[in-house]
Picture 1 (tube, rainbow, N blue to C red):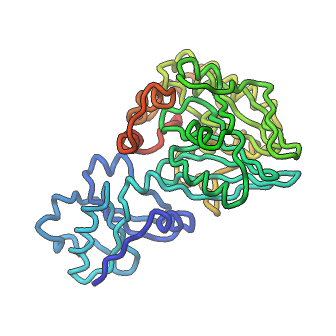
Picture 2 (picture 1 turned 180 degrees about the horizontal axis):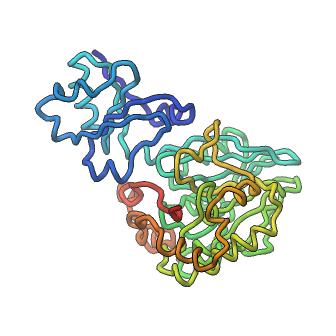
Picture 3 (picture 1 turned 30 degrees about the vertical axis):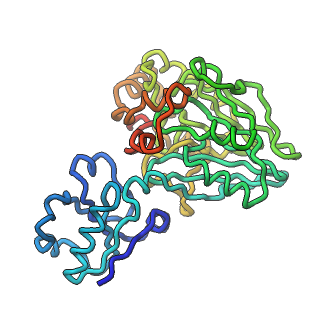
Amino acid sequence: MTVYAMTSKEVTKKVFNKESLFILDVRNESDFQDWKIEGENFEYLNIPYFELLDGVKEILYNIPTDKDVLVVCAKEGSSVMVAELLSEEGLTVSYLQGGMKAWSEHLELVKVGDLKGGGEVYQFVRIGKGCLSYMIVSKGEAAIIDATRMTDIYLEFADSIGANITHVFDTHLHADHISGGRVIAEKTNATYWLPPKDATEVTFEYQPLEGGNNVIIGDTSINIHALYSPGHTIGSTSFVVDEKFLLSGDILFIDSIGRPDLAGMAEDWVADLRESLYNRYRELSDELMVLPAHFMIIEELNADGSVSERLATLFAKNHGLNIEDENEFRKLVTENLPPQPNAYQEIRETNMGKMNPDVEKQREMEIGPNRCAVRK
């Protein structure tokens, strides 16, 4: 029997299309419980690889024969061996090419809208990590917001559509993933913008992103309005693009709100978080389409795989925007927090330019799920 390699892109399509998939995850139980491939119609069996060294006969009755079966491990090697054992028993199975490391790094490109005067907004969905980054394109120029460290996809896509990257932004100093913003700016001679209150310790040149900044992309009237919205970090900044889109960074998500504790300042930043969400955002048009920097759960994906929602809908349905009592809000965002991201302090220092880990170290630092949101 043949063993097939299934790519992260193929698995992503199954997630987007809500297809069924049976996943045999052969990592240790703790790794599986912490972070796995999620899909609305996926089923799972977690059997650590070392338990299968003597063969797979005992688990054959647990493996379906009427749906696609994918064997998953950390880096690929163990899943190939288990897939081959299952194949020898007559089952048709695939293994995840590159393992969970590849899954963590895959970016899927989705167009999320058009600009009024011509131009497009694209979303890059990092499906395994919950990160969302953006490219705004107009008249041959492009701006990138909250880029991941996998910079080639942005550069190659911009090249494929004939756009020059002229501006690169980070909405805040990220603590869960390593930003690719500075690398892209260096490679393209683009202006790199950072909120100055988040950049007090950075070791490189940047353009301060502050309220009142209007950055023109192309020769149309597409202004990126910087909206100071602290709370997740002290410098967190949102963007209103073309009076149509609200890039909310890690302040507001579709199903939750941003956590204020990743710089150890939860108690101090609660008031800022509430002010941003309950006052500054209330002054905006509720017809704006919210484009966050992360998603938390797979149910937040739209039918096309994108992540977006009208601000009015979030005001109505997002629990974090509907807590009238300030003490209850404070309790939610200071006590109801998931574990902090893996290596978050090292990631922050890398994004400041204080550390320069090699690629393999960067991959290890980022392994794990997105943990930027407050729990409900």
